[in-house]
Image (cartoon, rainbow, N blue to C red; front, side, top):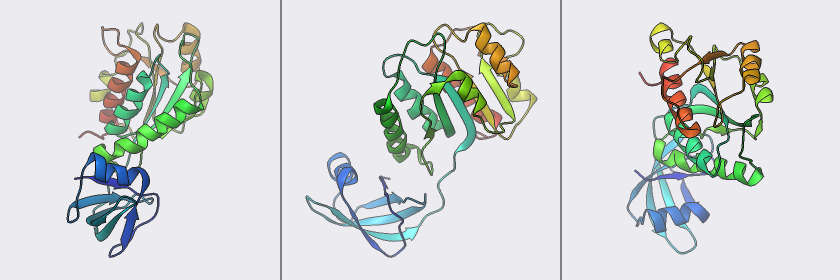
Length: 240
């Protein structure tokens, strides 16, 4: 089902006009014609069934038929991820959004080689917004501005479980947590190529983070972030 994203609130029984990017999406990408059924997601996160009534070069007119059951909310998972080089963070945002992660904080670390600016932040937020067409969540993942690791570690909510990935840490595997406990929320920090420094691990431990590994293989940043997101979703009961 084609999903259109509205920047206004909608109501049953009303007509609404679609312009701009959503018009392009419904006409050029999805190639809809009058009579086709679509789904609307309004600015309040409500889902509606609608029917295309008219399409022109300037707009599409839709009839809102009925309110649909609520879309799923985000899972209480927060990722803190060192920004990888090139545009690899784009996929981290997109896939984390699909998994249901609530929040992601891009960070710089002592071993970081990538930089980010406001243009990249805008792109990540646009990716998050557009990808909810496919994954069906109620609201996109919250993408924070880029900050340094220590500030990000300080700026976490009252997550029950605080983890920092550390390939050299042999005392605990993140998979052990899958069978040993269920928690209501989790935050996971993922380091850059080469991992976090010893000082950064110590800093995190002083803030009640537990250092864990993801097994014997060394993963790329973008891979580790997605694995951490999936395992965290399981830990908080989001993939039952």
